[in-house]
Image 1 (cartoon, rainbow, N blue to C red):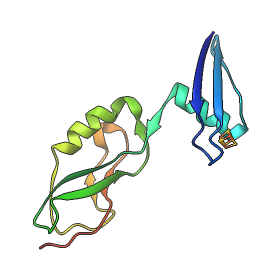
Image 2 (image 1 turned 60 degrees about the vertical axis):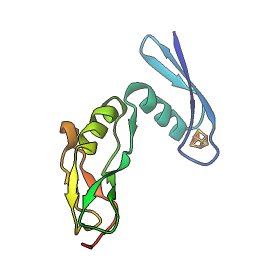
Image 3 (image 1 turned 30 degrees about the vertical axis):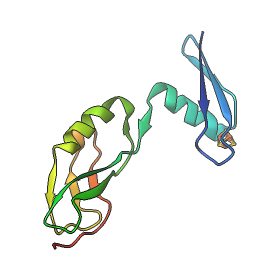
Length: 118
Ligand code: SF4
């Protein structure tokens, strides 16, 4: 049997969850939403990605960017390497695609704010 402990982030109550894997049969303490969260963390953990890229031609040097959906936790480091190599020219509008389908995850990296040319 494998056992994992998680803090549920689905609602502000922040319950401690215990997941037990007995031969592939998963059981979780907590409510239904917490159960879905813990099973997702155990089988396919994902995270939203927020960071910045180099921005040229604007008053600030970096553009905040965000993923359009959570990306697999195991791909985060490679996604960040790809993003850190990216340079963008102003002007940029919030929602513009900066990197489409990053690392074939099906997720786009988009601008998180609008910045005019200086
Ligand atoms: S287990 Fe349920 S009640 Fe507890 S934090 Fe998660 S969603 Fe909220």
